[in-house]
Amino acid sequence: MEFFESLNGLAAKVRQQSGSIATEEATKNAFVMPFIKNVLGYDVFDPSEVVPEFVCDVGTKKGEKIDYAIFKDGQVQILIECKKIGEPLNINHASQLFRYFHVTTARISILTNGRVYKFFTDLDNPNKMDEKPFLELDLQDIDEHAVPELMKLTRSAFDVDSIISAAGELKYIGQIKRELASQLSEPNDELLRFFIARVYDGPITARVREQFQPLLQKAITQFTGDLINDRLKSAMTGAATQTLVVPATADGSPAKENTTSNPVGDDEESSRIETTPEELEGFFIVKSIVRTVAAPERIGHRDTQSYFGILLDDNNRRPVCRLHFNRTQKYLGILDAEKKETRHPIDTLDDIYKFSDSLIEATKLVA
Image (cartoon, rainbow, N blue to C red; front, side):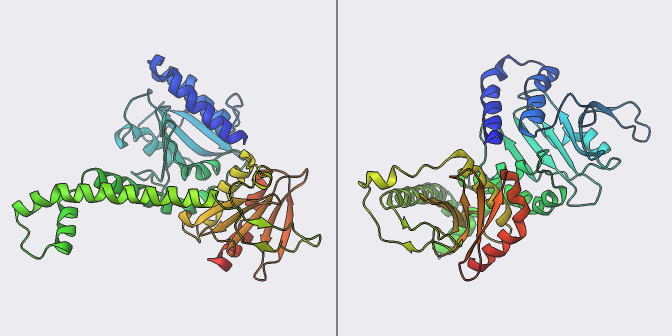
């Protein structure tokens, strides 16, 4: 919950103050340092954790400085290069990151203008920073899929092996999504020919391409609109029914479920269910863990009086785990092949990461 509050708070600050920031130094003070301290959780005033103007001579380059180096366990883990708010970010701005990356122990580097953060590693060649980021975060348009990955970079949850193992998938998914967005807004000739060849039997002349260009754009617009409407209908249908759940038994075995639908008017039943920010944060953590074995869009949640359930395909018969957060002692409930639940006590949300292997195995059972 604190992580989300810090991230949203910084996003609001960027929105309110970016117009009054005129220099790179002001960008660092107003936005980048709060990102390091409040979002990632590192002490910007502790030189054993955060070193500003970090110097690392490279070859004939002497006295060059990187804006920030973040240390953990005595080793450089993250390098950050900053630009002025509003300044476009491209690979030409990362020359110092390139030089410093292969002569330090850092595996993660960040290029930012205070609003947009681009995260790099060395997927293509060991010890050489990639030219394309594996993750991008825009504080004015936060992608919910980026949030769980960002949490892995925080001081309390930093796990470089987990970050690197997920980076390849993130990198290519991000590039595909950006290409899809580009093609959906303005299809190129290659995509146009692809669809014409599948719906038109004649030769694909310039006149035919000109005729089909607006048709393809209209079809894309209608198709995406239909997808949105389907999601809305699904959400409305889900809101119109309430799954009844018998509380779990004392020995920890799962509750028996009754999938009989009740009308929305059952105010007494629905009013007792309240989804908390802490439960949603737990959901994003679990989703970031199990997305390695299940497509992210398949991972959803349902809240009940007894627990907050995380499941696949919006299907109660495919449970991943249960979060028991509506009590003093929190529990993470993981089900085995016989649907028997084992509850593991946790003190903080970060403790969920300790059960990554068990969560992945539970997901494989129902995937």
